[in-house]
Image 1 (tube, rainbow, N blue to C red):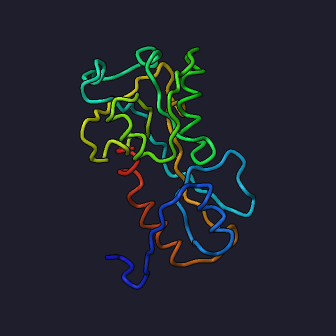
Image 2: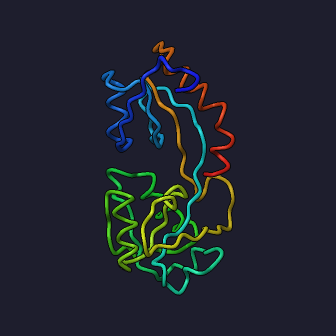
Length: 191
């Protein structure tokens, strides 16, 4: 708003699977999404950052006081995961992390929204592997602990990308991306 007071921004929160079609129809100019494994060639994606995974525990859980958690530590825990149809990246993150560790998660509940999952953690139904930003939610009775992995790199991280219609010209979108690019390094440190 400070740099571009003439540009009006309307926010729409939704899942990637619902946002990308809105770009194709022209209903959205820009979306911040988890990039799909097989992106539509009509869309352009610019990778922004990789978000770290952390573990959400009920506050009084025996492992909630730790400084870091390994997958072996939570191998026998009841796991809450997002629905794969609506949140494939978040769902697959949990499954792939366990697979790569030679473990099988004990999934007790599938839920659609992060807020629902975190509230289910608060009710002591189980634990969940979630993106680090989730720790900013104000939910009483939940403690977030960093996940320590044997491997580094993209394992245990969720990609975030900007998406728009390939070949489209949009000065407002480009201005938004320029503002974002200028701050991206500081955002990435917090991810």
